[in-house]
Length: 69
Image 1 (cartoon, rainbow, N blue to C red):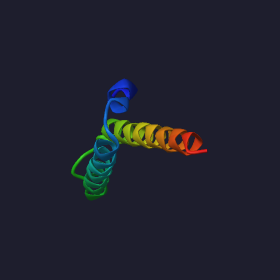
Image 2 (image 1 turned 90 degrees about the vertical axis):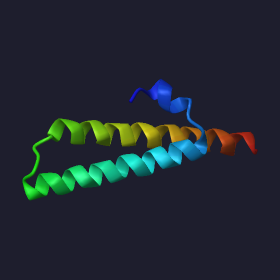
Image 3 (image 1 turned 180 degrees about the horizontal axis):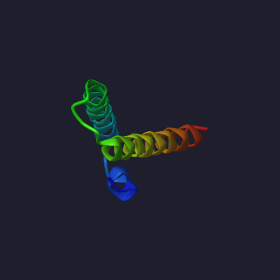
């Protein structure tokens, strides 16, 4: 997922996207531990997507905090 696409999401959509990605990551890790998959590439991609979402959410939070001053 590209950062530009994430920036176009609303705050509510951003939170739901983060939860959805975390759920997918949990399922993939579970499958990896059970030996059902070896998709390390997907796990890495999901972790990076979660980081992007959290970064953009943090940027928005900081920008609203500075605007309130």
